[in-house]
Image 1 (spheres, rainbow, N blue to C red):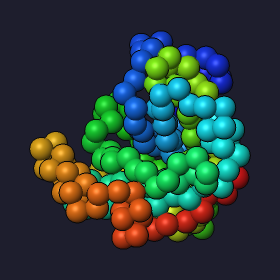
Image 2: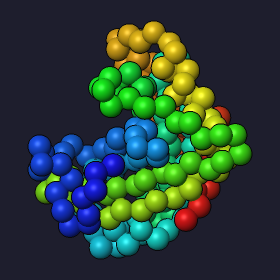
Image 3: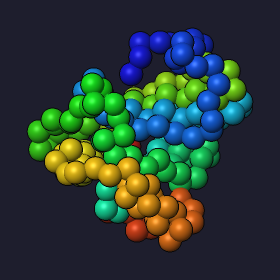
Length: 177
């Protein structure tokens, strides 16, 4: 995660983003960046303060980090595979069993590229190990982008919204903090 602060540009390379999310593991923590068009003051405050739940669903080479922030966003997800991260930036979690991982959250205004809010939450021990094992399995496996993208599309065709995907997730836990 960059050391850029709230109010600063998220990346000097971009000032506009498509709405969506990005998940990766870097610098000893899981990171979820949400790119929202013109987040309202209530959304920004809710992002910082409201209770959050996270989940994990896997389908072949595709895994999905699910997230829900009370009063701010319903169940949403971001598909991921470690091989989608440039090789020089790939890292694997190494939390020992029984420890909790950190999830860094960043809210970026997709229209301006400015960081609107940041937050760190703690993941439950079960979620910590589930993410660790998923990323390690992805690292150990062969990767084919076409097969990965087909797996993502299969999941979205079968589970058309976040609630449906959360209902079948392998893990769903509250995030702490």
